[in-house]
Length: 459
Image (cartoon, rainbow, N blue to C red):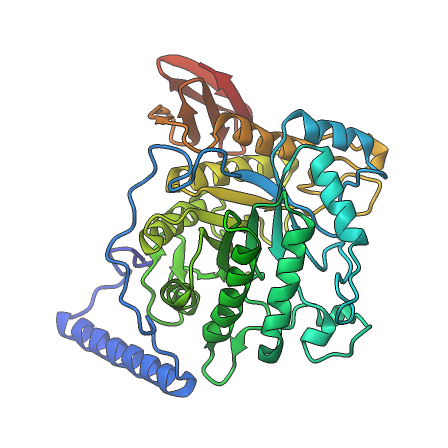
């Protein structure tokens, strides 16, 4: 729950009566503000669905609700990425050394329009992306986003990339579902599909909330089309972006709060509506940033990571057994002056939170650039560095290797709270969350870590 940011005692004392009057005025002001907000926007907190009674318990095994072989920890290909013909060659080798899930959209982020006009397919760039995933032995995952212009009110035969994030028009929902089925038929080895991306274009300005009715109608048509192609295909939604407000800055009631702040209830309402009205689902998809939307507020980057585990536990309770899938996750403020070591420590600590919360999947959104130099948070170095795997890729591969779904977690305590630990029977990962060297004891053995150092330790 949120705490009073000013502590227990005010600096100057005053009569008890004055305090009571001040509290009464503040309460009335808050009530008036909330009432005006509801009247003006038409939004009702909680929507039509009851609140989740209690979050799920912290995970004791990796990947709550996930079956054996579930694609757990991986990354998403974006505009600039590795290619099976153009390389970088070393990146292809390093990716193959420890295979993991790889996600691609069907349009945008380096993939051309697959259906520029009705009946006229263009699979070239998506074929190349899929060939890269196969060559590196990755588990292929497809995000069904975005849509050709003619499905969004634009002309057939043209692609205006500035309109990429517009929603499919309702009259074209059936056309988009047919496109999804065509994708599934062309790539029969793909078993996992997320429908759309972050509710792009699905916003109801009149009611100041997401158009979850429209999205769910599209989702249901796509779900039916994919299951008709192959009943074993796994389909998930709603791919809602989960924004949070900083402590003391919430804009309305929220049923999920923590030391990191409070969730925007409108995001939660969209998920709850989808849960009630979907035809079916095999996993529940979200994404989000650990930091609040108030970018001017800088919270401790390690403390806010508990948002990932706490929200995951809420989603697990809501989903009643559906695996929770984080399609994207972000931790770094903008702008940022983080060193690679600090960034790596936060990334590793974030993955620990996903595991502890019971997430079944989390996919790193690749920030790779076209520069020949290295880039912050990239998965392989620039061409000047040979295109080799970075520590970020190594971290993801280590989680894929040591913490696959079903792995039992063991309780290993760190005597130093600044050193965070996640363990299973054969491996421990430890993270120093400070900019100073740290000493701790793990299972009776001393461990020394440099500033922001991450260590993987065999047991």
